[in-house]
Image (cartoon, rainbow, N blue to C red; front, top):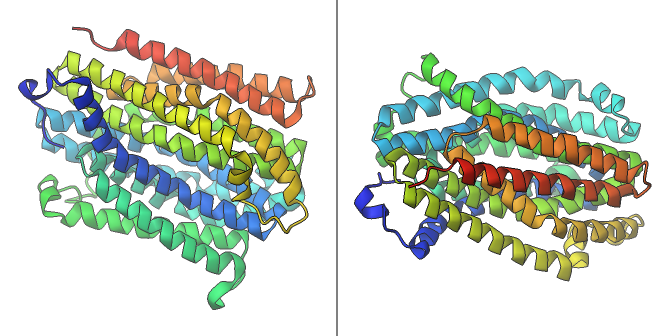
Length: 457
């Protein structure tokens, strides 16, 4: 991404800001959608394979994700740090921050693997059904090996995005989707002469794809002539404790903020498991659809992070605030379109994940349609909370947003879900209404925080 100058950016119109945001954001949206498609492929194929394996993969994937998002805070910290350093012309700091982001990701990934190996007793203690726990444990023992490559991929994606290389990130992720689909088709069902491994096949396909993606991005970052001047992997083994501390201090609150949000949905999956297996399967499908829509906002939020960090680095206050306002408007427009889709074609969307010849599909479809209507309720709030977080990360403000997110999700959202679902007797519908309440609290508080904190001038 080229260094900004005041003469070039101070007087950008709103339409020019929109174009610049979309130039960055559309490839990031594509890469995030492709990343999400990796999980959607597994969910669709497991839905065809059977209800209990589907429920196990939903539970296992949610467990992997909640551990991953904590470690991914380091990769998200790298993005504004690299963008700001590049805007200041400090290429040495670009290398230092990215390299230590990789270090932190590797150390974290190794430290958390025992959670996956002993996931069976943990899930059993959380009240999940024994037949689901057995399959989920086998899934996680394989999938957990992908934690280190998955986190390192996230760091390299942030590094390349901050340098304006968003299309490369998108193409590598799209290639990963095709590879994952082929491997999952072979290993889940035993096609093309492969063994039939069910849920373990889905995990093995994901692990293979994560390693392949890491190798591709590593090679691109190391050998592309335009990027060689950063010497990213030169003397990679040498520690840089100052940069290590900077990435860690910015990254851990981001990770905990993501855990607070992801934990809200993971807690809802666990509680939905108490309601019933068909409800848990429908919950997983509806969340996949909602998560696909969420990736649109994540891409725009990442673009907003880069632009705000760049303008902060050059001290262009007016451009910073205009860029932020345009990003918010774009995210609202996307949310309105998604709401229309969810309310207009719920049966079609849920049906994509099911083999309708199986006897349990009718119950899953009926409940999934209800949940998708509720997902439409939280689209605007979800868009605002993720956009506000992206804008605040551009300002390198992470600790207060972490506290606001924790309160919104865990002191408001989770208790509301539990009370509405069980004491008040609304079941799965009550669970999702609690999600809506938590997301509204987060969206409002975080957006107010950004506009109060953004520099004025």
